[in-house]
Image: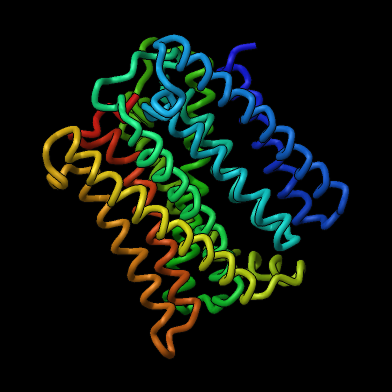
Length: 356
């Protein structure tokens, strides 16, 4: 059994667990929660097996030391590693805090991260490593950056739930803000699923950029998709307060949500500062003869760092509540995703090898 097939099985298990988590939250049946957790555990085991198989194949194929051959050298491989870190974090949170409510968002992000690589037609073959990546700093810089991205994504799930729990007044700007952000997130996820299904049906050769099929649609259909997006935002605005009620049903308090959010961000911020910025600067100096060149990836990494530095600063300002900090955490997640994926797909620079 090859690693792409195992990764696909893991993706299906994660998305199935998301469905069971949703029904568990709606119906509050313990059996559904247990099935969701088992699906996550089995998916994680399969995912781990696939990752280490690919690591072994990568190392043997090019006779590289283990530290030089960790399979995170392109967007396909890094997304798989990112999803693995997410699920590991979900298992830790579920065990540590004895709650399954984070599972819906986390398994959705992890499952779609793996499905995404199929949707964009990424090359799944083990490819020769570029000279710039043949360094011990690959393990130190790249892997730690993805761990930090995963921690920031985990904080996003806690931040959204915290805003839903505390902000239910539909006249509040923060209510409009968090319901719009969640509506756009869900809508984008559904578009990726549709993109994924269409790709499977058509088997487009040589792959395509995310949502590139939209370019083939008539303008009328594009306007319709925009209208659907607006409808999603309006629906989340109308029914968003129900999410806060769901959190209430499970006895989840704001203190727990803020604790998970804060811990994930502080851990991610520390790892990102050391692994993403400091180690990255050292590696850049070794590879390119300078510590910093304002490459698009470097610039957006610095913006990400500033957003989360501001978040941590806000937590220490007297009189600043956790809700305001959660709003910043949501912004941080958006910036993180653009830094991680958007820059690779939309901008060119020294990190272009991180594309498809």
